[in-house]
Length: 504
Image (cartoon, rainbow, N blue to C red):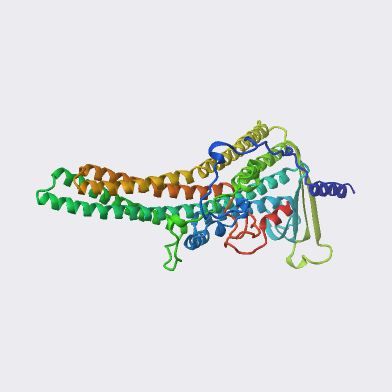
């Protein structure tokens, strides 16, 4: 009766999921309650024809709605299916899931079927009734169970579950980052295309100027100084062209690496850099929203939960371990007698192990668990601070790039007019060729700065979209997938995390 009562109490404790882990309380966010305001943060984009997010949060906007370039959409789709870094993050998640199942199995009894046979010879001088050969055969079931009175195994299971859910969030963060990386790399390729066009146009113009200047020099109407000045523009543009072509090829190689396969030949037509109409008014929300929208922050919190559960396991190590082992089957000296009446055999062996002297090992393990938790608290707080900084930086950039680009556009127009007027004055003999050379160089610089600023503006919008938690869903209005969704992008499958959480 006492044995049955003990088992009933153990089952009740297991069902309650009792552990010695400290009560978890989420640390306060070490940032202000709102993002910075005033100054550059109040200047919002207002470009003509800009698309609006209509107040939707970044996490609710599908990447197909944020990026409207069909070629970019196709490239993102390919990368999500083939990128090797993303594949590794998925495999890491699956490995953590398997480890969680291994640890969880320790909560349940083990049952094994066993069959054995043995033969032994005893010296005749020691044999009883001259039976020097003895044999025994057995068939039965063996069972063992560690009753988790103090929640040691439960704490280890909670730790493994939190680690698994943390790797699932890491996989989600990797996928969101991949969407951003592909978009930014594609935009870099477009920027280099525009720079190549600017450089090629400059080279064509400078070559024509050099041809005219050389003709004048050959006819004795021009100076060698003018000739060499014209030549410097040609050589500079030629060198820049080679550099940009090299960078263009390398940028495409980087894009191919992200895709995980060569660029397909059937890609749809794409948009030019200046036609990339990204959403520019996604609301930032509150910093507290990042706790549920940023997978890297959720990963850091899961790691903190794992460290908290580990303290419970370290505390439980100070208390006794109660184990039950038993077997039931048949035992016979002959193989044919195994299943005859009277051959039944059983054993039951409960045991209690109480640590008395461990050389300070349990104390050190508990101290280590507490230190690791404190380290995870700092890591969690740093993740929040980093996310706050990334969003704040993105907001500051979003509020200034439009005006910067407008100023650069006006400057480029002015530089073009300056070059036209300098050419006219030089042709009429009013001014020297140095004025033309200076105007041509300044125009080329202004055009490059404008292209670069357009790229930086677009990349900032992409990065801000990622920093606010966008890029996980494909289309706006879709139900977000669980962080441990199936490997195939867009595949429909029952979420594993839900079943894992239910099993806990």
